[in-house]
Length: 234
Image (cartoon, rainbow, N blue to C red; front, side, top):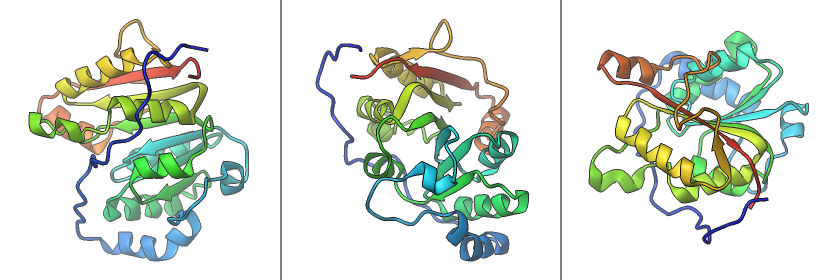
């Protein structure tokens, strides 16, 4: 067990996203109408039962903000021995992932379309996740908007609460000041330890290159992966 140096504070009311709904393609609209009832999880009260949800006891990976869903679908296809829960508020991305799940015949993916912080707080039990992925979140690069960044001390504590000991929190960004922000807060957490000698890790082979990463690379941005293991309870 590790000692807690200060009281934990859970989740500020400031949201880390702005809901901008683009136009749906025909395939996205079709998938939302026809596949959501199979793979989607409705907004409701009560904690999720992963064994009942997936029909097995496989390790569960949570991805926060899966974008267009392509990288999540690829990871799920490559790892049928793992379960994946994806959360995304933008309906075109939700529709795209639902289309890919059906197209690829994936049995190990479920989808939610609400505020990820609220889902984690209210619907995911403590010590039930094996991995949490947060790839290329909005950096909110203007100083006055930094408070909107999802990675804050209280958010890290929340993720630690839901991860099993030995579970991994994997973050990635193409915005260097945000990478530095993430590194500082993750290294300050008593519950996490970096999987590399420093704060940053090499991109693991199992993480596909995402749409946002490709865009960042074309703009000349670097990419920073941070992989931290939960080492103890508080």
